Image 1 (tube, one colour):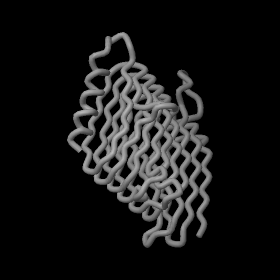
Image 2: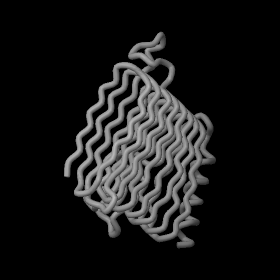
Image 3: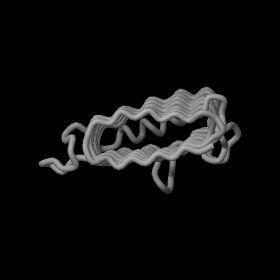
Image 4: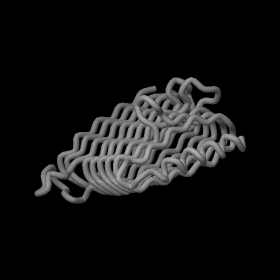
Length: 239
């Protein structure tokens, strides 16, 4: 475990010493429990993993925090294991996040708490928790301030809670002088649990599209608070 920590520190220091005119790239493959990983990047076009060389974290009882400041940054990460806590903070626009949890791993991505805070426009988030592994007790919280954000979430498990608070108040209608209105939220929750699934959405702004699909044997709950014109909202619930 100590060797893993030293290796991560050494790789991260190499990228941090790169010239300021170039993007910083971080690629991590880690195996072991009780990891505490903190990443902070400041600038443009930074990467934590990408489509060909992702960041892969294997193990249980992990804390994985990221802070990115700037535009056009990318995170592509795969987490394999259980008991994961993450705080991801973004300040900037046109950033992309792609997270898979429990890709073909022992453990089903159980007991996940992920808090994401974003200030900026045109950010794109995609995350798949549990995948086909049926994870349990996932709590995912989004707090976004900005326009034209996209959230695509898939949670396969039990007792999943997704909370999204989004402020897109540049316009309460479908058009604005800057053409910067709109939000797109697509979420799928599947699996059986004692308490079912819960989605809470609090959105201020116009021109949004929201699609919610919940399935499972027990109670499913959708709680929406929308302020704005011309929303397109579709909700599907099934046992």
